[in-house]
Length: 217
Ligand code: AMP
Image (cartoon, rainbow, N blue to C red; front, top):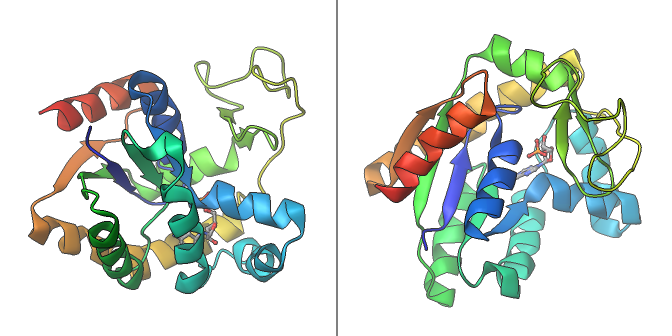
């Protein structure tokens, strides 16, 4: 099974696609954003360090992220393939990740770049609601993404929330971080010959179909 890395701006649909692919292929789903939010909720040292940066739309230091990844990637649900949703986000993370793969004798797999314009991503971020318990992602204004019962998670009955960093102002900062620090990964992975591009459609099912095509080709 091919491991998958998603490379895309905030709110491009990485989390939603990851959930769909996890269900189809039984892959492990590693969202560094979710791992960090768990640490914040627990009030751990790492969580305390990450919280203010996340609220400001800034990246969390590479060493902290790499520590999270190293612990997560060796869990049994990742043995048959996994999806990286939100990692790597900097060249340093990508280089350290290459070293880690060598150490663990694992394959890089495929890197999927999701093409989306800033306006569409912003619209999605500002109307996104998530389950604080299971992490499932919803959208208030999309027929196919809204919960069955308003404000309540279909899966665990928890009250849905808007993420602290999904405001218009923080979205702009996150987008700037993405352009400056993450976009260079496009060339990094293109040179390695592992990069595939898909488009973000209005319907998650159309985007999912494109993702399946590039994973299975
Ligand atoms: P996400 O849920 O992927 O949108 O991530 C939410 C926030 O967590 C980001 O805006 C960053 O502050 C932080 N974060 C998540 N993944 C990373 C990463 N790989 N490197 C640095 N910061 C990260």
